[in-house]
Image (cartoon, rainbow, N blue to C red; front, side):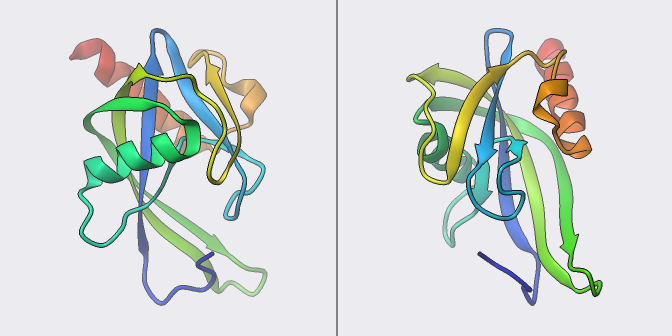
Length: 143
């Protein structure tokens, strides 16, 4: 965990599509433990953003992806009850396409699902995650 960091940490989120579905994971660790989200995680020193995306999807969902373009960059800042910054991630979200493998929860994911991007209500996603998925779907349609 990275409670109360002294600087923002870089995280990479991946919007993975397989046909007309998007990959979601249920987070198994803080922050947002138990919530549905995009696969992703912290970038390692010396690791390119695209490498982080492929590694995190493989670790969390057991699949291989073809990493595509940048979707957007989002700040995820969580404050405690006293207003102190408990978590601060700068999230670099990338578009990706499924290449191979059967999605299954691994590493710090508690569950995985291929969801219909037009019906994300049952997953109770963070509004920014919904926005990123919509942006990625539009980028995918127009490229």
